[in-house]
Length: 302
Image (cartoon, rainbow, N blue to C red; front, side, top):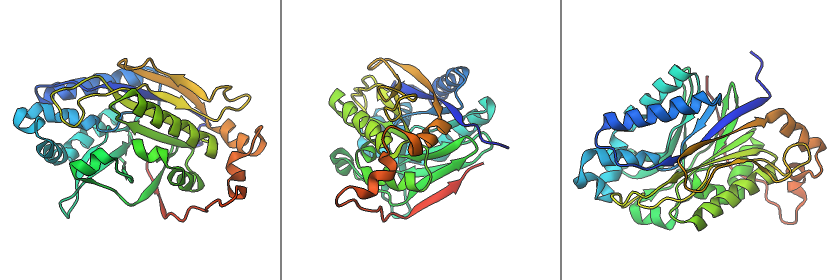
């Protein structure tokens, strides 16, 4: 099967609510996926720490205590991923599941996101650089950088703060990533703009697309995701014939909505060689330019 040179993506501005039961949470997610798929998008992107919303289903002893929240949401991770797998199959879409805590064998928590496919494959990327808040929560850094090779494109995942560090994405791009997925969770508008700036810069440097998906809305019941600000965006290099601004689509700040755009992967590949500027190729000639010495695992997903 020949891979399409274009990809329609839908990025969620996902509102953190307070579901009373897991069934209520499932109804909400199912409706979001249904509506996302109805846009015609082949890839749906949910934000960082969207999984924390599930803690609300277990009462104040869980959702009001950060450690209990991490433990409970990590405990039900497999069921959460399976639920998204079922939806991916039902609607024939690829889904970046909203990230959440995962408990490792040593008892430590990491922040992991799963890319699931309609045929049942699952790819996992853990967050690599912890924010001061995550350090205080006891969430630890993952180590492995991955690129996911799928029938609709090759993806890297830079979870929120990771998007602000260029060598991570550079290693992904050199391993073949065409689109960078950036699930984010930021308390303030300033934080949203940091991640937005990082997403746009990574697209420019590497001649790839980037897709930012934020949590939005206030959830005062949760010590982890109590305030959320942001807008979804789909970014490319600002190049003639691609985008004059580098913005293919962007949402309204703090609205609950899907933001969609068509990414021309074939044109981006050509721009690397024939564009106004050759940022990707000229990386190595900048003074002091490092060659990323990063072990990138390329994972093939059906």
